[in-house]
Image 1 (cartoon, rainbow, N blue to C red):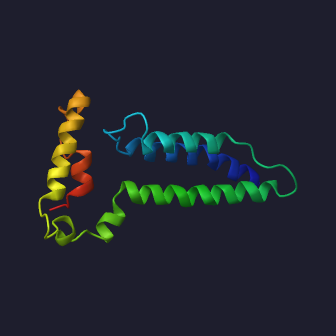
Image 2 (cartoon, helix red, strand yellow; image 1 turned 60 degrees about the horizontal axis):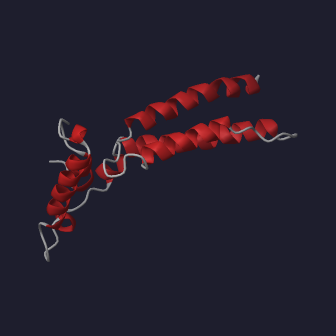
Image 3 (cartoon, rainbow, N blue to C red; image 1 turned 30 degrees about the horizontal axis):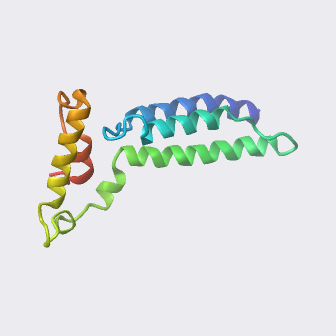
Length: 138
């Protein structure tokens, strides 16, 4: 009975991973090698790999589901910016006394380079990837 319930939760867990990965922002600097692609590849590989056989097969399934749920929860916290909200960056860190405009210039430079390489970035609405990464919420 527990085996059936665990096996039914696997497809649901897989779909939950895919939903979180689809929310992950694409990296405009490396569109072919980014975290979203790596996560999708890892999740697909993990869910396709066979369970170990033997007497502990059910324990293995249950432990893999438990580990996957913990990983899913961590990814959800990252995509919802829970850590950014819990541990906000101070303005001192973002505007160092030695060069207060360093990060804003860096963001502007990266955005210009990205716009040159990727025309889709020009038409985006809302904050860009780098604005979300380096600038604090107001």
